[in-house]
Image (cartoon, rainbow, N blue to C red):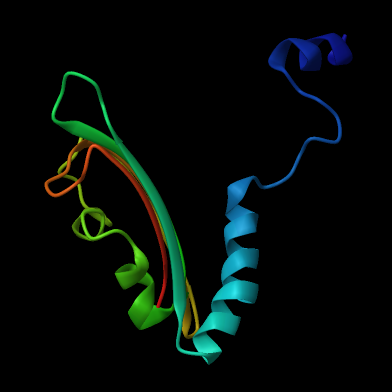
Length: 123
């Protein structure tokens, strides 16, 4: 009876875990701390315009030294970090000592965002 109930819920043995939460801790602990030793940060982002609207979907993230992590995000995404001015704004930041990791997903009007963009930077 219990196995049938777990199957209906979509439970699959061996697929447990903590999802992206643990991955972000490991990334900041390893890559972030390593980059902070060299006073550097890396960032990646992608943005695409939603057809027939003035809104963009942006996904971006960065990791590295605390002072440079936000600067590694695309310029149009930096003011949206932790903001609430969009339809969807999911922001995550994690700071461990001198290292910081940021991630954001934004759906809404973003001034300065191009129609399509791929942003890769190392500072």
